[in-house]
Length: 370
Image (cartoon, rainbow, N blue to C red):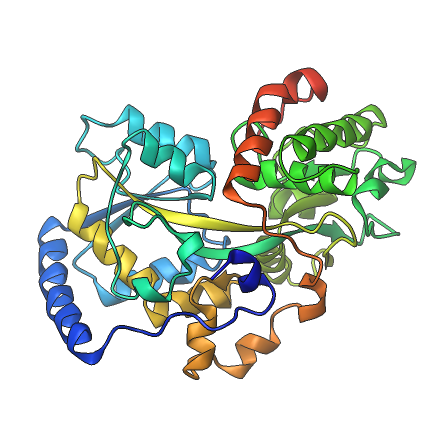
């Protein structure tokens, strides 16, 4: 099954394992639970509570396994920061060493190639699309969304609907990325989307064309070199932020109309992206890490992400088996808003990422900071 078919409607996934295998998995899960409880801790990194419903997901794990303390590191870290945290703590079994990571798709194979991840296949493995996972289980897709605009309509009269709109004088000192494009997967994909809207093709071209458009936005005085968040939108520091749709929808809800935020999927350059999970090869708490993965890929964990407006990787399997409440389906943006979305291949993402991380300073010249 291709990721493209996932975007087009999430066609049928492979069925769950036979009942005999399921019984064995249940037995193994019970043993895993005991081993994880004995370790007593799970260390996560880069999981903001307003990202993809993670606040409730973490709370759900804690409620199910109160014996396991969840130690949360640097919620605002980017994907590159997560890999660096593993590298820097290879010999550290203390609380600064992450057990698990959640990174952009291109960072999964990179971490695997460096030997930073250990393989583990969750019990629902067969319901994860083949091209969204490493065959040996070093990393696997968890959820996806599309790049969109979040706009503070108290401060912005005309909501931008395309990437090129961002160069207009009416958006002076208004636009920000939700991360540093030299390190954040979310920001890198944002620049890729801008590049596609600016005439590029997915890969090196989208990276170059995206930076050229961002340079125009910067030259026009519209680019704000601050990491855009819910708080910066509300404060008016970054009235327009590009981020994953699920983040923006969550921010909108949390602000509760103060100020009003409109979430717009652009008419051009609609890019969808898969994030992936992995367990550190140096995890101080490997059993807790595996149990965390079992929870995330269970029906309960997957629905937790869906409540946070993310499309979980097992979405179609859940729908097929009647596991998704209708109110959750109704809360998602209209399906036709995603029709133009493309899922760039891993190779295209890698080429795009290389161009942007190496060229941002020279082409755009705007150092994005907290």
